[in-house]
Image 1 (tube, rainbow, N blue to C red):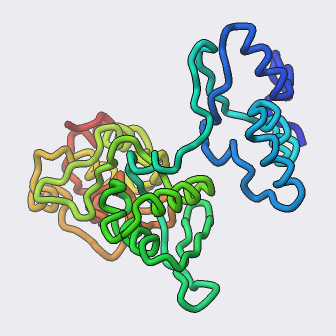
Image 2: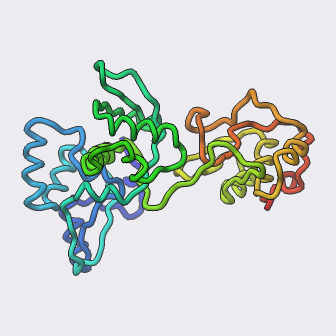
Image 3: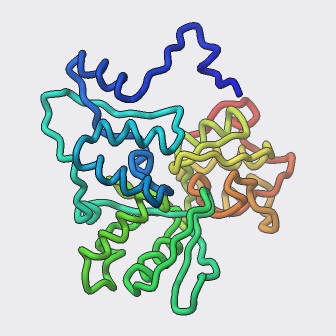
Length: 290
């Protein structure tokens, strides 16, 4: 198999320890990988896991190099910082209390009685727990998607927030959910004057691939629906939008990249009638409206 990097005009592969040495020559040091789970020995067990754990505390650079070997990793997304900065490399799970969380998860059949299981429908990662506090948190996350929830809300039913923080850290290490420093707001139902993210309105004027705030894409092939999305700039009422579109058809959902489930780029969750009489100068000209 040939990767696109192999065909680039300038292509020079490096082991991680070689890359770290080059960075040190420019007074830079390794901080982390862009994806948290990429810097952890997830899905590695047995003697390999024991060997990696022994390296992890002794030398983080050696640990990362051997992690590449055990994971057969060919590509990294490494973050660097100035070498003079003092880093705290030991992760404190209590820090999870600072963040907000979101997850496109569904309840699935648990492997044993008394347990609860949820599966992330984007990457198929599944977690199972018997802990009532974790179960309550997972249920809240499933109900809130695509919006995020702060730790305080997830821990409302927990008698031990510190233990719940450790559980959430283990879920994050498995890439089970999204962790945010700032809250992600998304309406479960459009208000009287629906508002679609400005970038999504712009992209709706340019093509059928419309981005959303969770770094995904909704594919809307129907031009009339894209015109309706452009018009949802918060200035028009539901009745005005319905009249302009010539009526609504709630039987057909907007085609989405996540299988048609709730998606944060569209606040209505419904598809406008695809009548050719959609009256929007912005749609007719191909320019964004609002």
